[in-house]
Length: 355
Image (cartoon, rainbow, N blue to C red; front, side, top):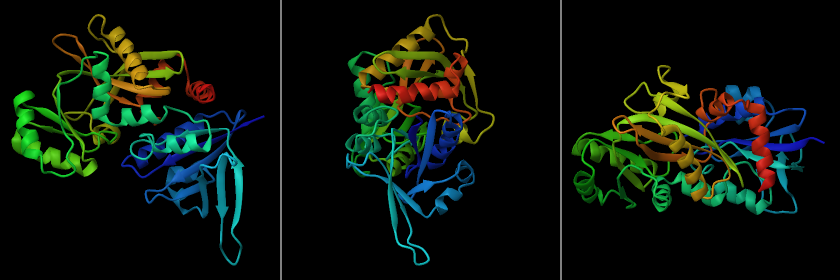
């Protein structure tokens, strides 16, 4: 009997478009002999729609759907509430489509941060990916720093500004200049795909960078600059955690921001790059350790720097639902290890049942 899979995509975050691209790749990769796929698209306005075709996701016309699809936290109905109408005098028609596993292909806020995971927990529906705690902790860069500190993983020195407005900026800048020096990276604590991130070389740029970051999240992280290779490692597992080989980011811009990642064709990724002796093993060990420390389950991509002068490994951040686009490192790394996309998706679905 086929399993009923709900692929949920879109969402209200700044990564809406990337989620749609990821969903297309995942839907194409799922084995239709094993699964019936139900597609739920969430618009930027927060409307949940039942989507018929993958072509409509590609061209964006899925947002014209007249059928509402929702997951409700009532465990008598573990599935999708699909509501059609009213139109042309027809009555509203509602049906429940039972779902075996939800695949929340959502990046950033309201998707990768524990919110939809909480809904699925309440609804009693198994789901792919990290749980509520790991999703929330992994999404919040400041919280991730605290978790990583507990296991002694080296990371960039940092200063935070958690005021709900810009009233603490002067104090924050004083602390950053005293403790970090320039240049520094300024990041919203909760935002994905390098949204709202800036590099500041002086106080004027630092002020503008903090103000920009606060447009995305009032919690702001300011980090020292680490000169080195930008590398990533894919993690997969539950009780047993596996770490992939290492991939390196060759950003076309000064750093790997949103445009460099998705719009600049000069940005490149290299699987299994040349790195200083022992760095790859330390990256893999640290990736698994950080994943376990935040109570990760299912999948994550863990990002590091490898210092050019010393070869030391420095933790950067963890992404608990990394991209699955055709240029995304996570599926690329597992493919390089002999696990093609259909097998990877099968693994993730089995892990949802394991939990």
